[in-house]
Amino acid sequence: MSIATPEARAPVEAEVEDVEYRIPADDFLHLIETGFFPEDARVYLRDGRIYQKMAKTNAHGLVASLISEALTDRVRPGWFVVVEGQFKLDVVESNLPDVAVVRGRQRDYLAADRRPEAHELGLIVEVAVTSLARDLGPNLDRYARALVPNYWIADVPGRRIIAHSRPRVADGKGAYEQVETVGPGGSIALVLDGREVARFAFEDLMP
Image (cartoon, rainbow, N blue to C red; front, top):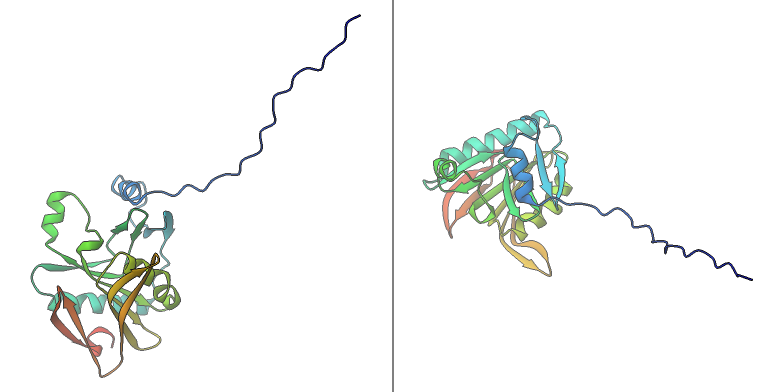
């Protein structure tokens, strides 16, 4: 008399949840260069995730234009101004700041077929109409961690410019040791490579 034995069953594997895939900054920038995104897409990379920038208000666009013109008129040779340039901050960050002052000459970056990186940025300016909390929070942390020496926030509703300098990183968090708030009637200095290269009246940047 034979005794039937149960068939062996394959072990049941535990279901594994999907894992978020974060794209490196180099891959993201390569997608831009290959035309993956529409030309008018204002996209940027934050912590490995791709975001699209919100549409500009009228005030945002005009103030950004005024600031870029003032900087272009006064910035010394060896630096140039970029509006909404795409910069690699680190391996998972590629922001799209409103205005930036960049070391060198445009033609040198074109000849090398590369974008400026964090260590080549002298100043980043963000114009805040509805984005002040983000510009004072996550954006400030990112720019400080990337050691961008100067970070200005043009707070349009508040009629002030908040100027940050002397970045530092502690326990993985970025901050600026020096913060100055400038309002109507005041002035703000731009310091590059340790020396003041220009000083702007508040009204030159925000009428």
